[in-house]
Length: 351
Ligand code: ZN
Image (cartoon, rainbow, N blue to C red):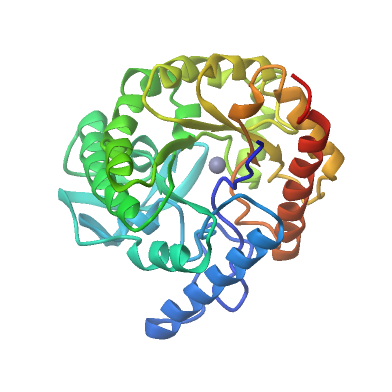
């Protein structure tokens, strides 16, 4: 009960990459960089285990950014000539690569770090990939000319990699779709369908291998960076974006849905729209460096329990912890582990 998990990213140590940045520069190159990425992954595996977390991730230590890490392995994308583009409905500007030809995977994307993760923990492991709609919103398209077509082209590539990750021993494959909270109508129209295309066959592959594979989607209000904080302040007293997307997700084949809860203005009753799904409830705030107490974490779990049955409630972080100072992220992992343990004591026995 209350299996704990992370949204995905964790800060990179200063010897691996620049700190406090969303697109940090690496501090090494070539084989030294490859080694440094795995060293940092090992460090965070140990930290997650020490914090008592149940589903362990690689902390996204091997990718510069959660979208571009995947795109770097895709043929048909021009990384040499990045262009500035407003992303997430122009919330902020980013330098993005361009789609210039038909898309194809150059090979495996995350094989090294997935196998490394599998080899270094006996716990269940989760791997994150960007969702098709969020990728489409983070590249400049000069070739397909149609967001839906482009999303399904990416979904096919994501599916190839996801199936290979399952074969590497990954137990949960999560797609990150912050764009769902920005383009709610499109998300319900085709975003969820593209997501299902990316996750196609994972349940069957899991069943065939005797290691069940769960599928998940993470939908958030973004990292705790200034542009996102300003955006959140403009959303009013109640954030009802999830209300449009959750019914489509409830009707989908995706097993787990991650949402923001603590310190957000999301009405908790929206969680009831996810009937039958595992709900990854954000009990750790990523927009504040103040570390939650175990009591606060357990209280947040208690509030969510009014709308999510306990066997379906997975305490999680609101979003990735990447831009935070390392020691704050570490303390937040511990708060998550201890808060979930407290919640098991408090709510475990009762009905
Ligand atoms: Zn997020």
